[in-house]
Image (tube, rainbow over all chains, first blue to last red; front, side):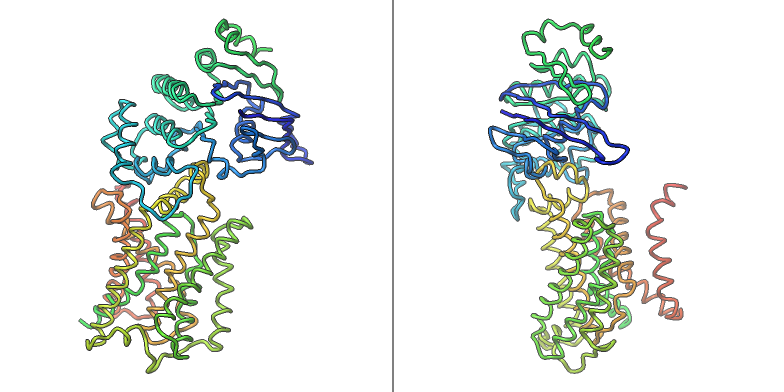
Amino acid sequence: MIELRNISKTFHKGTANEIQLLDRFNLKIENGEFVVLIGSNGSGKSTLLNLLAGTIHPDEGEILLDGKDISRLKDYERSKWIARIFQDPLAGTSQELSILENFRLAAIRGRKKGLRIGTGEAFRAEVSGKIAKLNLGLEKKLDQNMGTLSGGQRQALTLLMATMDDTRLLLLDEPAAALDPKTAALLMELASEIIKSMKLTAIMVTHQMKDMLKYGDRLVQLHEGKMIRDVNAGQKQNLQLNDVFTWFGE
Amino acid sequence: MAFYTTAILLGLGFAAMAMGIFISMRIFNIPDITTDGSFTFGGVVTAIMLTSGTSPLLALLMAFVAGSLSGAITAFIHTKLKIHALLSGILVMTALYSVNLALMSRSNIPLIQTPSLFTMFNFGMSEAATQMTFLLFFTAVIFLFLTWLLKTDFGLAMRATGNNEKMIRALGVHTDRMKIIGLALANGLTALSGCLITQIQGFADINMGIGIVILGLGSVMIGNILLTIFKSQNIILLLFGVILGSIIFRIILAFTLSIGIDPLYLKLVVALFVLLVVSLPNLRRAS
């Protein structure tokens, strides 16, 4: 379970540009829950994701992961349990490393990167098996540099990479926003399938209204740093596109 | 002919430094110019230790330690105090000038009749043959070591750090520490070159490091050209190209001198040559 308790975060404190993005914010997410996070620009969605990932830290409040306070841990320390998919489809992979090498790093996300060569035959077979399920033919190109692939392919691989190690929380920051509509749809399906089949706890930010309805089993709307709507799975099923549309007009 | 033999010897001697630049500039994407200082540092440590009768192998080790320390300090300033990498390097390089001068307490230490790596591993061969054999062996060892290192989990994390810092942090790598280790390794290798060159030329000099970084950069660029020729992105091939680049560089300089160009213009030739190598890919694209 992931829990945010009384989280406050202000940027540029004490200057004319001071902006309080979260004010005593609370949120509890059960294990296996897939939360879709929505809200207009500046509502605090990205701040929330960054706080969870540990790239920024709260001024006040606590972040608990399965009861353990992780508020002060740095991003690379939290990555043991938290995997992240960025909006930029190229951001989740290293272009100068091969597909196989990228997967190797993902497979030891929570472990020490030591002086052993971990890209042997057994590992290759494992990765090849996983990638084959994408039906993109990439399992034959394991030694090809990531940089030679398209954004869509790289984002799909990034998703798979997130499942290579023990993942207790998956953060998705508009994972399909930079992709063409067809690829975006495929990617969202893939993400949803992975989250369901692996029973992952996930938080996804999206601006796509149809995605808000289609995916996830809980919908949370932020506005000016506050949670103004929390829709559970039952209520969510009955939602219409129009309902969501009006929320943003309020 | 001896002219070119010397050029190859020097090329091999500078190869470790070129591989160091390859690590800082190519792997980590950090413009590190501590090099000028750490190269001299390696030479100075070597000269002092050899003239005081220490084993050449220990001198080699200490040169590496000295260089690593310089690189680690640069990376520390860069990552922890958030100073631009270029400035961090300049600061350490400048400071090292005084350190080197203080250590030598004069501007030059000649090595006359002192034991060296080459007297140690001379198996009854001529001087040039001994040097060639040793340097080939030495360069091969470093090449193989780096080839292995770059394939390990640590090496992969190292490469990803220079390439996509955001991603590798999300994958659990403390990138600041990684950069400190990386620049330490790069400058350690550079100092090894300083150690070797001092023994090849028979003296350490306070100015021996001036403009060294450009030699390394040029070598890496030649390595890049090799990749273009083979249409490959293989990092090992690039590393091999860097060594080759270091030797080619020296041969070109030797050639320049042999056709009678005044040594005064040597640095100018170096600068023009590097400019040519660096701009070659762009020139080809433009035409």
